[in-house]
Length: 347
Image 1 (cartoon, rainbow, N blue to C red):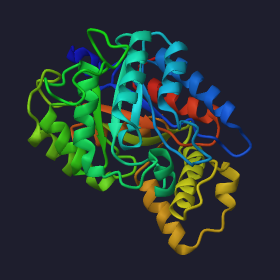
Image 2: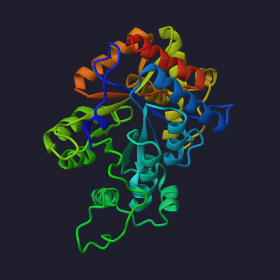
Image 3: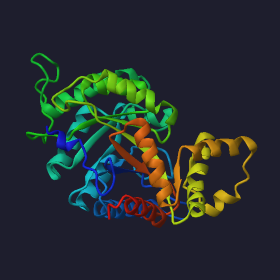
């Protein structure tokens, strides 16, 4: 497998590749069908604007997120584009049998050779009752994640040693190459595992900002060269919203903050409108939560966002920035990504 399938190429004036994490968010007054159409349009436009890859995240039981089936959505987005890399950010591996994921992504790779990424996480991506329904068991141990990754790799590569219980099982289709595996994380567990396995690593800075630099340090210090990479490669997910003015960006970013607040209260729902977010009767504690949330979102006019992204890239040493934008409505999301691309001279 070539490192070219992992390492991106910066575009325009960017010092590192820019990519997108898409959740197909469903806004108030909208439908999942509209959210998925918006995600498809975003993939097409992101390709035109020079973004390196677009990943979709696996979440379950969340009315405001329509990306519950990454493999299905990846197939659709890849068919609607021609060059941008498409992948999972990520597949929550404990929810699935490794053989099933090997077959799904083997099929995706056969359909779209050289464009598919397989990002893996060990969290459930939902509440435990839903996780148990997905897994048909309450006995899944997240500490078994390394073994699950090894099994998945064995199926993708056909590399089980003689005598292994799965040595005679073939994941079909399987070609001479396969999608690169990425490990995703929001703490040190997957960072260290990615380093030990010599895999690329993606850190969820957008919801675990306090752990970013320690996790990246652990990944780099643990890294062992592999057939996949000769040196570390780390991207970070970063929440960002750009608008024509700072004031409009703040207006657009508030619905995402309210969505996080409702999720924290155990009441996930569709992304509220800016008007609803403005009129919400925040308690003092809720206002503090929103303030802390906004401090982790790079938002403002295009130059302000570029400056914020650059400060973050330099501070963390990230090799790639994967931007996620939670706003109400596809038009505002498209506009944000377009403005960021313009700020970097990518279009």
